[in-house]
Length: 505
Ligand code: BGC
Image (cartoon, rainbow, N blue to C red; front, side, top):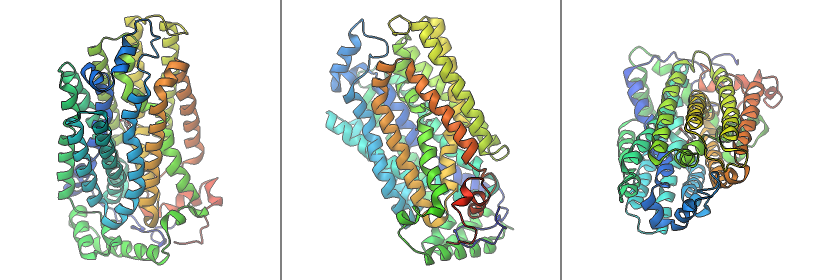
């Protein structure tokens, strides 16, 4: 690692000022992490709503007719491009918003970006709740997408910048935890509202509730010291530091360090989207693209969006399908807490690899059970016992995701970039997340229909690849102050050739 306190190049404190866990830093981070609620709510709600009969009847009647056709192959029941377009439109909007948000977050700060995201999401939820045609549905979803594009960009950065370095991993997992709460809450809602003819309207419209909660919260917290210094608000930065670090902390030292490193970053002012392409930032750029891409090709959203559809397709009744996806959500939530507890002790790499192997085994086993249960063509009806086996395997898979690729995919991109390109890196990472989610959700039902159980083997292949990638290319970031991070690349067997030790900002 680079000598502590010697790298003025990259913005943020260059040495660990030993920040303690104060009640203020905890409250602030919990509030910031609650931004994850809106993303989670959306993920959970769309899967359930798209199986509600009144919803399909009103907006997508052809899907209902298709699902009703008795002898349809179990893998093909819900294969409709229009329905997938509804789910996916959010991701295109999120992708655009992420790239724009990188500038907004640098110019307005992390906190204001979260507020902006919350308000936009609120508007989207209201429009969706009142939708009378597909156009309104899609417009609402675009606003939801813009909203999560902003908050997903700003909140993880907020957490990583405010948390004491030693506990950064734990604090950052809070974001994924709130995503998980959003998922579970919306699954519950879907379950209770699914029978009501207006249930879909309430499910979609109640998105305004998590939006209101997180927007209000974000409006009440102060911005991160790094962001305030970046925007020339030194006095506010000092206040913010005093509040979060507590009495007795070396606030002056940390502030001086921040000012020095932000100054150095500004002196080398260039277009951040150009700077990030420079060779010396290649390791971070590769991670910003690879990590969210890999997170998505674990196949998690396929499970989340389509768990109810999937369980219905493989022979569970309507209610048991929703109950199963709720179980899946709760297991995932518990697993995230495990990650919170150990991520700063055992490190990121350990969790990535352990979780990856766990997911890999489960995916292979699901494919095997599906073949055993429905025949290679998928035309036989799966037995209840085997359907339960699928559920257990998917829960184990969900737990693996919950302590590895779930939270860590928000953490890594938010902690590896120097301040001058931090929001840009996070923006790219988010854009990749949305683009991949879009591509996968657009193609999954068709893939399930054509590849059948092979869809699970497809994801198993990716999980094996990403686990190997982490083992070879991701250095450990645990406990390292944000701007001593340069050292991890300098010492890495592969990345060191890209990063010259003599180069500063
Ligand atoms: C992912 C989402 C996913 C969610 C599941 C997040 O980290 O980015 O795509 O739906 O976890 O809980």
